[in-house]
Image 1 (tube, rainbow, N blue to C red):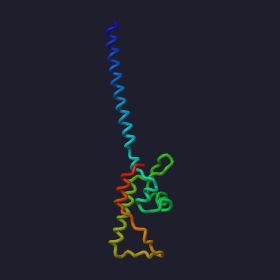
Image 2: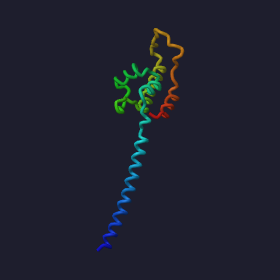
Image 3: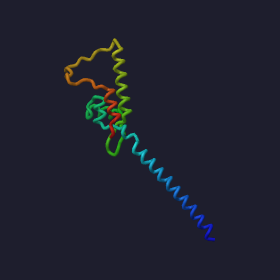
Length: 135
């Protein structure tokens, strides 16, 4: 009787080791998926404000509070998805082009001249930098 039992035991051991190997492979896949999840696509308020070209505390905070920019909570910190920043920038570019095409649009008079050093940021370059960021 010990013959078939040992063969059975050997088969079970082979099955156990193959299951363990499969579990190890799945764990490795999960770890790599967790590492490559889109946290790199989440920006801090500071990074998002730089890309958009606005003040993170006042303007960006107001836009978030109004729901114009959506955020994600990571722990206790608000992060802004890169796709959301791209959407907001594209939306602003569409508005700007519509205003420029409209000949009946009144021009807003500035009470204070814009400082010479504050140029409009290069959106494409800023977005490319943000894509390379790892948060």
